[in-house]
Amino acid sequence: MLVITRKPNEEIVIDGGITVKVISTSNGRVKLGIVAPEDVRIVRGEIAFREELRQEGGTAPLVSAGCE
Image (cartoon, rainbow, N blue to C red; front, top):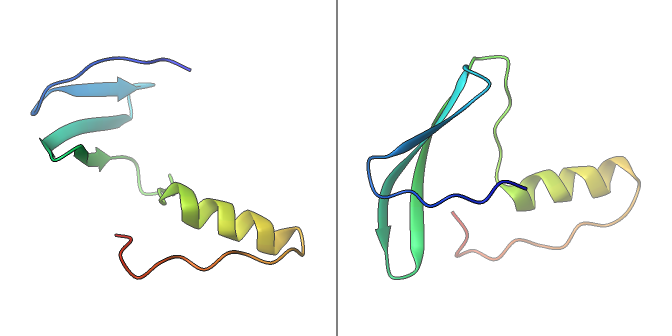
């Protein structure tokens, strides 16, 4: 895992085709903007985890109403 520090409006570029930009930071939260090719699927981690559980035949935990 690569761990880097970025400030608002700074970006990282992944493999030349995906850009992740720090939009803002506030109250311990980070808002990110992601630009990627249309064939690259982008989902929140808890959504990907839930979908993975479904594919394996397990049950997925409910996501609380406060998640964005």
